[in-house]
Length: 112
Length: 111
Image (cartoon, rainbow over all chains, first blue to last red; front, side, top):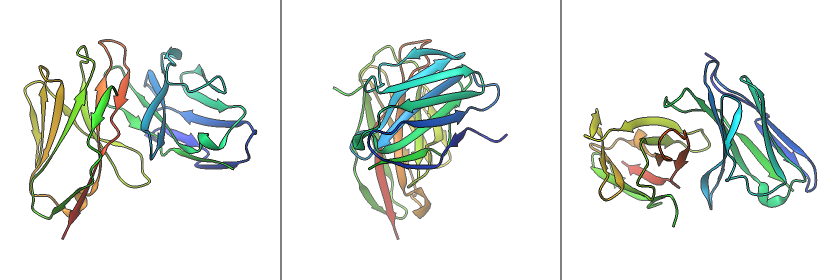
């Protein structure tokens, strides 16, 4: 199994630009999570999906952030426009219901 | 109050020491509890689940105290390779699937 696949691994962009992060969950997993990690705030849950449906997006910081899951094998997290304070590592994770949570390798985002 | 709280440490211990971490959670309806380990610049990985009766996996022991709403992780005979950040994870209310991570406790095991 390839595991959870995230792309890109690193993203450097300028303030105001649109950023799109991508995630392919493990086949057969029905829950997908987006987390953001910074030194100051630790690992924060942004949004999660069950069976492609967003269940809780209360962690999404602002309207600049949006996430979609058009099918069971793909999800995106978009930031538009990006700001320097969005710089962080963004993790995608997936699991079967009540099962073990598997993380992708993360996307290191730097907004200059 | 944060939903899941941990002492960030760092905990600096010599090899062979026993070290314990605690984690408190605010949602009394939480049903599932885990400990994850995260190495520097890597993704978190499951260390062990935490069961109501307590459970052990080699040198690691996890316990749950529902009345006081905390979970603990005990590491015996610490190894250099145990150096990492240990993350406490708590589920939301039953059937929501939501998983909340603590900020993590950093452990540094020294020779």
